[in-house]
Image (cartoon, rainbow, N blue to C red; front, side):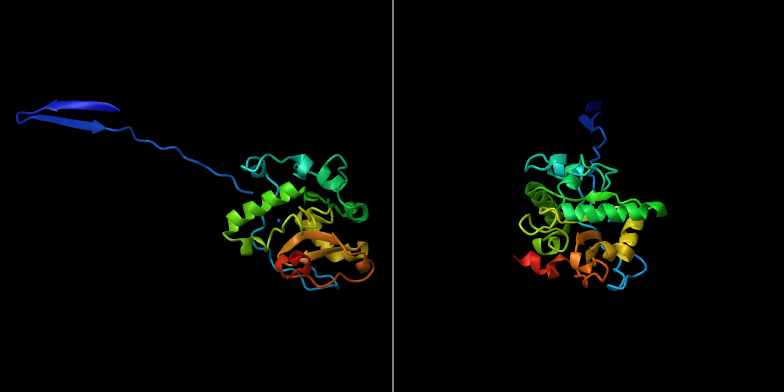
Length: 215
């Protein structure tokens, strides 16, 4: 800060010139078909997705989480056995995903994984972030389940990252027992063995309609 002094006939005039400037702070934000299968109507266009696996999950006051908890590196596919988010999925589910991915590959479709298995600590972290993002536990519940109810924690759910893979699964997934579960999350797939060769069951509007989320 500089102080300029000026002296006039009637007294002392002090002018203070403060430096101008500011610090800009930037926060990062993270976490995603068409022809309908015989099982149900085409999903509605998704609303903003629940918080996706991200670096923000590693910096929260609750302690760090990483790949060992299910954080997914960019570019992960359903064939990446070295990634816990993939390797910890239920065996029948992972087998069905890989069979579908193998059949989709000749059409240029790759099954990339945005999220798969998650540890309870990671799921709790995502739920806290969702409450902060959406402003209430009730609204957050439409996007993120608790660690006690989430099929991600039990290894029974995967979030498929690419839109073309989501659409391919929506059209063909029932043949493998792979079904979309929530209309507001067209990327979320689970195994429904009874659907293989038939139809997927009707989707819930969002997780709050799923009876499993009430336990």
